[in-house]
Image (cartoon, rainbow, N blue to C red; front, top):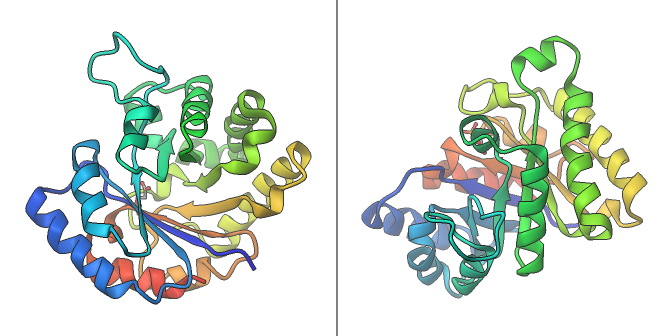
Length: 247
Ligand code: PGA
């Protein structure tokens, strides 16, 4: 059976002091982890966290990457720069970036391509808003978001990690039920199957208020291959419980 992935998304949280305490506790508590483990940290902390996780099972991820390779793009961070710091994963198209930074499906697809070209695994986030779910448009929305990434990345699509994150569940304490999440994951898996012979090996992780109490049930669903964890990844004990629930 393929190993699940539990990835923390710290968002814009952390400090040199807080990171050290958190990551040291995670390293100490995750040595026996049965799953892949990653922490996606703010770019300025990549080097610090890379140093702290050295020799452990924990991989380091970034939260965004520029759609451009290099040049006059003030404030942007390229995939090559992320790779320089040993970055293994990079979130792409998180709903907060789609919402607050105007990232379109096409931009998200190019960002995934940049990451792949640099040897970084993009964790491509898709998910519907509450209004879209209530209008019965969930499948249409996530399929549109994934289709753009498939269109741009072709057969390389089997190299991505896909994250289903219903926008209404992010940071709200409202989780999709295991059945609701599984239903969307199955739709995404079917779409991947139509695009690649290797759809079974793509990890499709769930995100949106995953916590120590609900992780076990979510992670038992046949098409849920891990979790993308925001709030609960900032507390070592909670994040370690989620890691312990994964296989
Ligand atoms: P949450 O965030 O776990 O705090 O809901 C998940 C995410 O945004 O990746």
